[in-house]
Image 1 (cartoon, protein in one colour):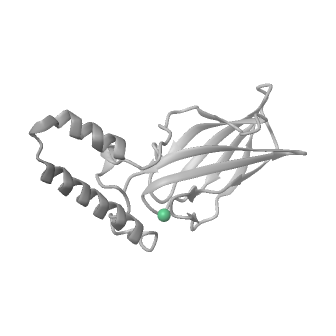
Image 2: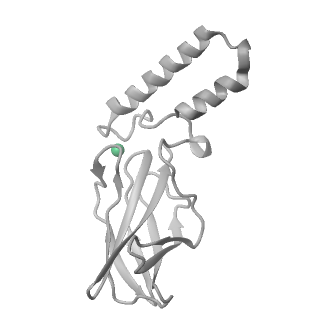
Image 3: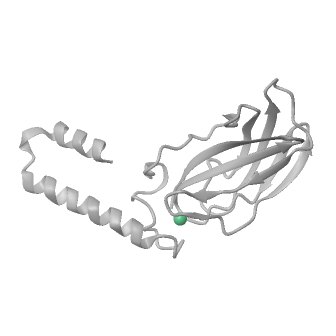
Length: 178
Ligand SMILES: [Cu+2]
């Protein structure tokens, strides 16, 4: 956020009065504190993000852009998780149903694995209010329902795949609009 503010200030050049810049920073500070104060007490205020709606909505953390087949390798390189379908697409506030395809390091379908899904908001320190149910659809496909994202903002969705003695976690990151 500071980077974009500085960039904007440079772009506007010397015609921008110092008082205007100070006012902008104050507004930014107020907006930021408002975000923190709003916290997670409500999912209906619409003030639980950095402003804007729909495609213009911006999170304070870099996130993934949804596309069919969006792939995330586990942190250990054991399993690859691909997001093959999201309903709605892109992922949105509240109820989501995802279909993921799990492959091993050799590219083979991983059938019969146990998946743990833990949607959470790292900046708020809380998880989802609903437990994701995982259904093995066969051929390495798993349905995750619901992936419940109860408020707008940055959501991390780590998916832990356990197959025998192998456990690995791949994480998706999405910005959820108000
Ligand atoms: Cu939150």
